[in-house]
Image (tube, rainbow, N blue to C red; front, side, top):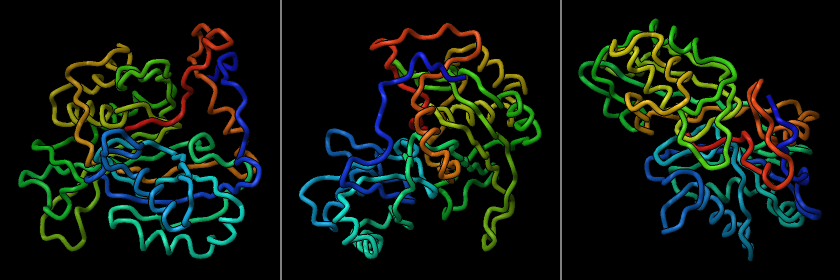
Length: 318
């Protein structure tokens, strides 16, 4: 549910006059990054690497800031990330045919931009998105994880029962307040719509000599709050290895507060796989709707005015 009374002041849809909005599709290996967003103290981030490379290859005097679909945490990977950047029209016209190749030559090997193009009217990488899809990969083979996969697969040292985990997952689908699975941020809503959550067995690797499979969680929602995916997976691992009953993740959700039994598991098993957007003619409306504060049915609406200008239900780190 969206609370229109808590809408932020109007924001211009699209770039400023004289600028062109450019969509970037990108991937990165998160191991050596302190997350997506720029940070103080010289920590290496994906945003800073790309913005710096963009400034250098375009020979710009100013830094052109990126807006991203999902701000991933330190150690989290992505291969379906989407960002946008607003560039001066003259600069874009001069660079559009060669920008991706130049960025490939400048960026380090753990971040790649594989598609660059002018965004349609109304597009905002963050607020136009209608869902984000993550995968979390777990190996429960008693011998551990294939060494070539250890950078993006978590080892769980007990066998997992995916039927139990999927039964638990079904209790979490839908629109809920996920405060029990999120790191609280002042002024931010924790209401999200979980669209898809299920576990599947997939082959380890077609070329691997190791027997067995990986347990892979697919997690798709309109947006995620801080630590949400890793906390959800942590709760379901407790169900899968028999430490907790099937009802446990749903009981934690209903409790509305963090449960000390639920660990926010390691980030390296998590990958942002895909971001979904509506048809071009619906982008601007989705952009505006996503900026509104959400409440659950029956929840009192927030006051209008400055007190209502709290964080909407956009994406956050996972």
